[in-house]
Image 1 (cartoon, rainbow, N blue to C red):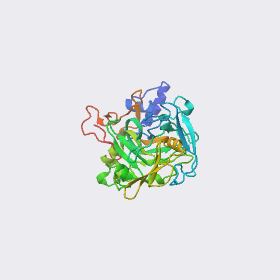
Image 2: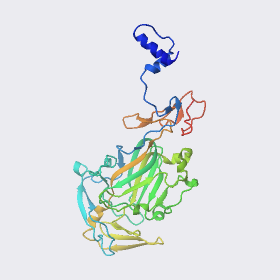
Image 3: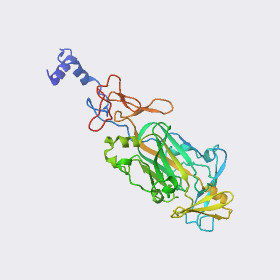
Image 4: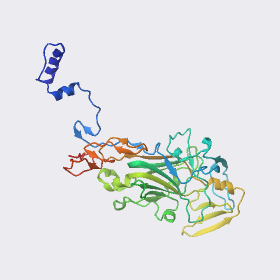
Length: 388
């Protein structure tokens, strides 16, 4: 008997006339049971590759900072309030530049600049900022090493890292992104930025990546030309994880790039501030007792010219700090193609994949017991590699 005929008989059954015994129980349940929502990991009953939504993995996630303005008591910081112009050879203060100075104090809600401001809602009309303490002078060859660290609580496959500086703040001359794939036990460089890549990081500027070195961090000076150091919105530096990697177009078949994009933690280290000027060869190192101008010539030799301290020295020191309004990390919770979402497993925000395809583990990285008829595999567009 066809289903249509049985439906007619069922209508008769409802009137108490007769019944239909020809409908199998499974068909009956499909006809009358509520249909569950479609599972992205299956097409009807056939397994298919599925991935969690693309998100800003940093949003709402706490960050730690090695230095925060006002955390150890009230302190002074200064912001640039006018466009920058080249430094005069006989002045400690950049010509045409003015500063506005204020007090930061972690005990005052209106004067706080905590690391939580980096990953909250980035509202252009009401920007919140993290600020480091004003930095003391560093001798030539030494670095600031102010660090921001983000723990994602789970493996993610990253697409980009973006950092936006506060309005009227100075964009760093040298900084680096790092990633950890083992929850902070070891760290691997992701990308370097510097006007002097070889001198600061020992790497060539804008080196070409080949299939032989696809997990090698590059250094570039492109950030110096990606916008002004000051402005209403603040300068932004964005790093695309796969840009310039030859196997990026065939990511699913490249375990090397899959490993390269995987991270549990992300770190940025500000190594050297870009002082108020726009000269690739020069930057100021300002101390309490003197102002020094440090210059790298084309041969890498160093020459230090001492300049008399002026009344603007204290203001210059207070301007020498890092200020960031937004830190974003774009990517997907890593589930190896076997889950469409990640769920919290602990109160501290740690996540785990909601595994399908008879897989298990925080990243769906292995088969369930008794499903070992073939080796575990990452799901692809061609084959979901369901455990059997």
